[in-house]
Image 1 (tube, rainbow, N blue to C red):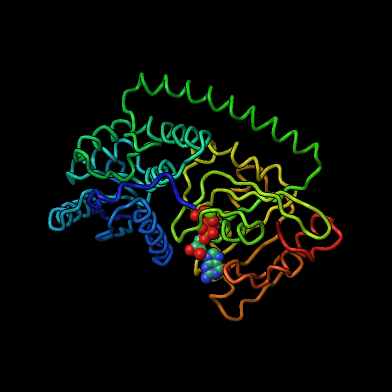
Image 2: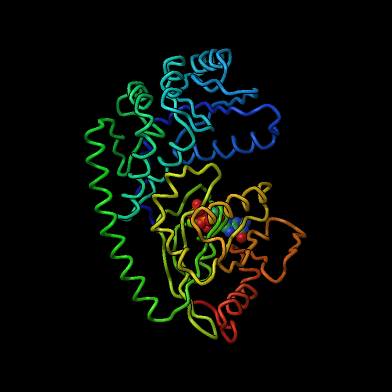
Length: 375
Ligand SMILES: Nc1nc2c(ncn2[C@@H]2O[C@H](COP(=O)(O)OP(=O)(O)OP(=O)(O)O)[C@@H](O)[C@H]2O)c(=O)[nH]1
Ligand SMILES: [Mg+2]
């Protein structure tokens, strides 16, 4: 399957520097792991990561988040290493973006802007594009003072991670246009949601059980979808390969269910994102069973598990039956399952454990037996 939306590969890569602020006492391990993930996000957005720094302080600076000494060092590094943009792992206020842009002479964006930018590049369905644009507008509106400064630092025609809307459009900064756009987008989204609602109702009448895949980004949801449903869904060793939900029928010995692949979660997900994606994620909310896919080889497994559980809670769907699917078993030896009643160990890549997984899904859905394979 070919992607229709990708970032321009002929433009020179943007050179970025990463920065994090942490309170004193926060374990360096956590801060560095989050920066590792930020680096992956930056690379996914087509940038080249050229350096990083973390500052630990008792209190953040209201005007610049990090201290003035650190800002000075950052400016120096940017000049010496020809850096185009600085990406903060923390959420920045409009004033902080403005001040940091002024002080470093570089574009300054934050993790949320970067995530929303990646989503903008990934959205393919009409609904997905509207949801991303709405989330971006809601995030940028209170930060316009900073975004305008940031825009002024953009090179003509150059890449600009964090500043792209759906369809590679630059973000809008005119308040009047933005307000009108919000109304337009909300009306269009309502219409699409109504269509989705009727489709959902039809399916509910047909009595077919629904299963939804949820999990941290890159855990292997789409790979598992392809294994169970031969769906031909895009999979990639990058963050947020999937944005629009895909649903396929799967036949087991005792019955048929629909399986939906959904957008992955990540830590520090902006709440604007969760609001905007509520309708897409309704597939998960209406499901009879959730398969929570985890990368059991990841050193951040526990943290990722906590993030997913928290997002599910924010979406109001923490009380659904869940089967925990520990994936990528081929990468780790001797992984132990503690709650055997509600978890399985598989490799979506090699297919190991697939039969066991099917049996467990069939049991949870109340089917007779799960001997046969997918469609
Ligand atoms: N070794 C190994 N790699 C796997 C396994 N399952 C998936 N992968 C790899 O992990 C990467 C991510 O897989 P995807 O299926 O795209 O993950 P996803 O959860 O759909 O990710 P997003 O859509 O980005 O949220 C790909 O490079 C897969 O090939 C597995 O069981 N073993
Ligand atoms: Mg995927």
